[in-house]
Amino acid sequence: MQFQNNSNLDDSIISQAIEWDKAGRNSVLATVVQTWGSSPCPVGSQLVIRDDGAFQGSVSGGCIEGEVVTEALALIRKAGDFKTLDFGVSDKDAWQVGLACGGKISVFIKYLDEYTITVLEELANTTLSNKKVALIINLTSGSHYLWLNHPLKTRNSEIAEAHILDLKARFISDSSGLIGKATNIALFARIYNSRLRMFIIGAVHIAQSLAEYAVSAGYDVTVIDPRDTWNTHERFPEINLDRRWPTTAIKELQPDNRTAIVTLSHDPKLDDTALLAAFETKAFYIGCLGSRKTHESRLYRLHKSGVPEEQTARIHAPVGLDIGAENPTEIAISIIAQITQTLRQPN
Image 1: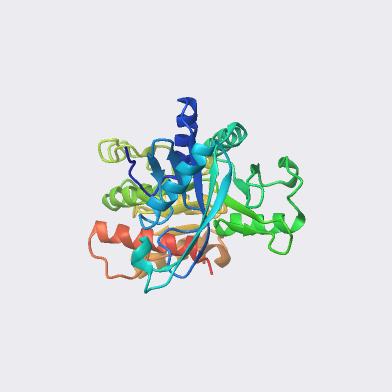
Image 2: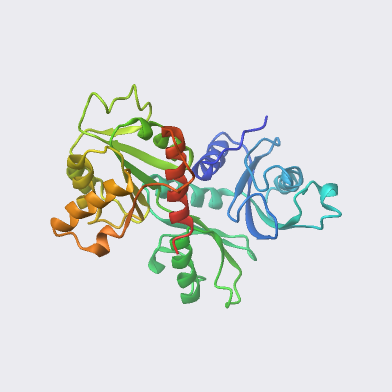
């Protein structure tokens, strides 16, 4: 049995490991801890392997999974232990080991003993409550434990000030990797950030495509529009719908720095009030649909109402990257691309 890989496996890989343990099966967790050159999966990518060879997740997009599974099964037969697997492949020899894209990958594999499963269960509960947490892996001892964004929240004295500074930076950049390189302890941090959210103001045609793309990109999406004939589950299946006035909804939903807000209604009564509420938040992205002329009118209204230029400068308008989009689907693509650019390349 083999499980399919997809883009939203961060939580499901851990959940699968816990499920297999409850079913009395043994398993190994594999984590990409370093990459050099060309690598199809980023640092932090994970794979869980069951004692019969079934697996879920990916550490290389398929290039080295077979070798990782083989090594994992060897650990399971030993009923313990851990190991770092290094795959360094030149272009000339790449095909011989299946790493056709070249580059280098280091994968840490760990037999999931009772204590480590307990740590993963705590990790699952923490991510379920949408709290920031890092899974810390000691690459020398093999131990796994959690760091809950506060030095007093770890049970392990290995976390030094240098590690904490690196951890905070990794939460901001949303990137897993080695921490505290200046210390003598080799620690890896698998970052589990709070969930990405997107609030779409206006249940219009573009919003239908944007909501679909955003969900695929890993966002929890909420469409905010008080017009109940527009904001329906028939038009937005499996999407969170909020039929309150944007000001009320945004204030209660409390956008943070992992939240994008996009106004699409083309109705100032909805869009402007949403913007006024958005300016009071730490949302990392605020975008507004409309032409340059429409945006000039919008800025005039906002400035006249007392909104300072430093706030209106946060608006991305006309919304989306300039890719020559002409129809709602293409406009939605340009919007999700710009949001991704803002998230991943903030400067």
